[in-house]
Length: 238
Ligand SMILES: Nc1ncnc2c1ncn2[C@@H]1O[C@H](COP(=O)(O)OP(=O)(O)OP(=O)(O)O)[C@@H](O)[C@H]1O
Ligand SMILES: C[C@H](N)[C@H](N)CCCCCC(=O)O
Ligand SMILES: [Mg+2]
Image (cartoon, rainbow, N blue to C red; front, side, top):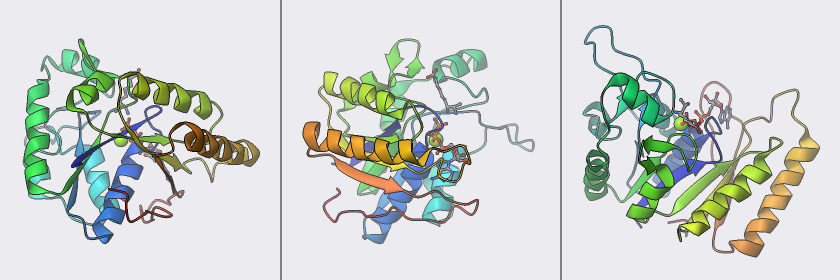
């Protein structure tokens, strides 16, 4: 396996944090790993060049990995399509009048595969987000056959969203490589720890029963400095 697709139960669930921390942990195991972003919306324009900046999620991945931006970031191989409107990619591309050609993304991934042992490819939003008017994220993943890493959380509603995502993955005959529980809400005052802990227990049991091959990982709540580690990463993860 040389590409893992990192998705989540929704946007803003912590895919970027999970991708960066996973890359860091794998790097520490000695793997030559790079991250890619399928398509980034909500990107700012560089006032000096009037060009779209490097994708925000790529910048955060590198900060979490504690490495500088790489040449494949600066030439935009790690995120060829960047749009200003922070919306679903199909809408952002229409508003920008700049259609997304999925072949360009596939070629970029292949180039990264030729240079690295593993590519962690982060999606935009959840699994059924439209990349274009005619292509859902999950259908693209199915075309490519990528195993999926699914990021979830302990907020009320996550169980339903997680199980729906797992069902959708199964319906396309794809592999659930792992589920990452993000402690994203741990420091929020309104967090109900009884619900969060029960969600962890329920999801673990559900995975054991229905997806015994899938890995279960957790990432901690991170302070602003973006320093942290995945709790445990099995040696046989990839
Ligand atoms: N483990 C964490 N610790 C602290 N804050 C977190 C954590 N995970 C996520 N966050 C917060 O939640 C926000 C959203 O997380 P993130 O950007 O990783 O979401 P995403 O799933 O990648 O969203 P998108 O669909 O836009 O790519 C972050 O900017 C950060 O503020
Ligand atoms: C802008 C945002 N943070 C993501 N990058 C894109 C999320 C698209 C979600 C679309 C949807 O599910 O309705
Ligand atoms: Mg992200």
